[in-house]
Image (tube, rainbow, N blue to C red):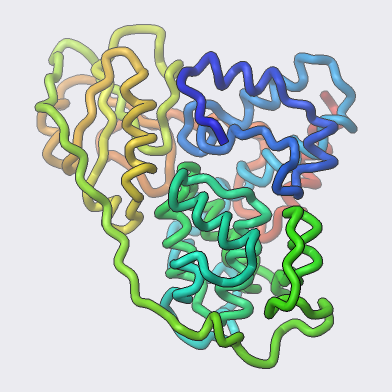
Length: 365
């Protein structure tokens, strides 16, 4: 995936989306995916922006529905995150069973599982921060349902490396795969992976019929395990300069919207709190991506430190933030995020209840 270097390039990508081709091919590693995920996750654009652009073309709903449904999954995850703030450590519905250990399968860390699509996907993730969604599901299934690792650490490892690392999407997806948020697990055999990833692997531990899952024992290649430590490298920043006569907009790793509150002049500060990154560590390439897009916003200053310390310099004027369940700055007024279906609020235990409401709204468009 070639990363966009400007907001206009992102707009070009939105304009070039073929929703019909997307619906038919998105599950294939070489499919016509949008390549918008990092920019949506980081709040540079919103799901609403994409849907409004698609609808402006005058295409019928049936052509748009597959893509809108996938975008709606993102909004659904965010709504769940609002009500379940500990998704990285607590199961949505039930505990994972069975579990053999709470470490990382070494073969996944080293991209040496013997499943070529998986291994190249892991290497690509480590190098670029990108991984196709279907390959993410394969990785999660092999780590939790085949190697029997507890989901929390592998999910945190993937979150660490992803440019589009979204708290809710990532951890709920891992729970979905290993049967923590629902009553069954996700498995894929070698034929399935070969089909969607254009590989020709044979004689792997996944070359079984789907009825053979779960496997009777952990394959030998997945038995070695490793304890890992995920650490965020602090960002070197210059001293912040606050204009006391201006209100302040606080940006985060999940709000890098270049058009947010552009109606007047503000102090604009990207706040990177060490305490947040201790709980949700990010790889260097991920944090570099965040900072690089923040620096594209005119007047932006980057601050590495606690909000408590910075708040002393911002008192006396209005302070604004965008809603996020894990990034809340006391004393700041909160702007709502852009939603495709702002009418749908609250907690839905499953996406399908959420989607039924969405379909009714789409019928009025």
